[in-house]
Image 1 (cartoon, rainbow, N blue to C red):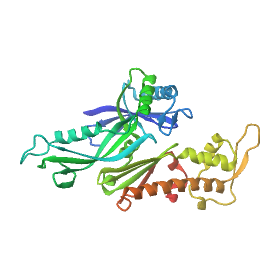
Image 2 (image 1 turned 120 degrees about the vertical axis):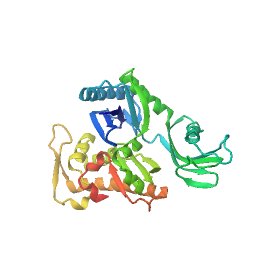
Image 3 (image 1 turned 90 degrees about the vertical axis):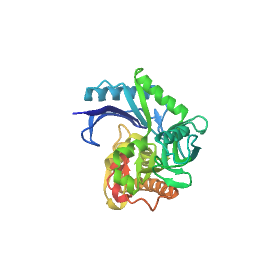
Image 4 (image 1 turned 90 degrees about the horizontal axis):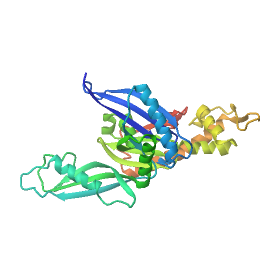
Length: 348
C-alpha cells in the first residue's frame, strides 16, 4: 500500500514537551496512523508563556521525548515540525495588492500571481525583532470584485488580498531553534507552526470550520482562541492566563503549597460549584511532618469557578470583538488539560 511521508511533530508547551510521529495513507484519504508518541515534563520556568527561556532544559526534554518516541515507533527521527505559541506571538490583519505586469485584456489570474502576492506578505515590513511565521489568506480582490475566495481563473489587472499575518519574536524563535540543536545537532526543523493553528487542524472537522466555530485551548500559562468561518481562519488571540493561575489561586485560598494545590486541582477540581455538596471535606497534604489539612470541596470548586469565569469572559469579549459572535453555528470547542475537570462542560 502506498503511504505519504512520515511526519514528526514536536509541541513545546509550558509544562511538557510532546512528540508524535504519524503517517498518512495515500489509499485512504484523511486516514492517519500514529506510529509513536511521548511526553516529557519540562522544569518550571524553562518555558514561560509559550516562549523558551532555558535552552538547556528544553533541549534536554526534547532529546528525551524524541528518544522515547523513536523507540516506540522504531524510527530514526531527523526532521521535525515544531508547534509553539504564547503571548510573544502577534496576529494582525493586513491587506496588499499588485498590478499584474503581464496582464492585458482577457488574461487570467494564475496560481503564480497568488503565490507571489502571499510571498510579498512574508517580506512585508512588520515590527522590529519579529519574524513572519504564517500568512493566512482570508479573501481576494480582482479589479472591482471583492470577497473573492478563488481568484485563479478570473480575468483582471489588479489583484489584492486580505490576510492574517502571524509573527513571533525573533529571539524567541532563535531560542526555540537553539533548544532543538541542543537536543541533537543533526536535527532539522522543517516548519514552525503556531500551536492553536496546529491544534485546530487536529481537533476540528471540515464541516465545523465551514459552519463557523471557535476553538479555545486552555493551557498551563496561556489560553488560545482561534475562529474559523467558511473554512477560513478569521481571528486568533492568546491570553496570558491558564491552569497555573488556577493552581496559584488554590495555593493562596487554601493556604497550601503550590505542588499540593496542583494535586488538589487535578484530583478534586470541579468547574461548577453548584454541583458540589456543602459538607464534603478533603484532606490535603501541605507540609511534611504535619497532619493533612481539611479543605471544603465546595471552596475548591468556588475558587476554580471564579478563575474560569474570568477566562470565559475574556474569550467571550474577544469573540465579540472579532465580529463573528453571531456566525458561529458550530459554537465552541474546548481543548487543553483544564478541560478534564469534572463539571467543565456544565460550566460552558
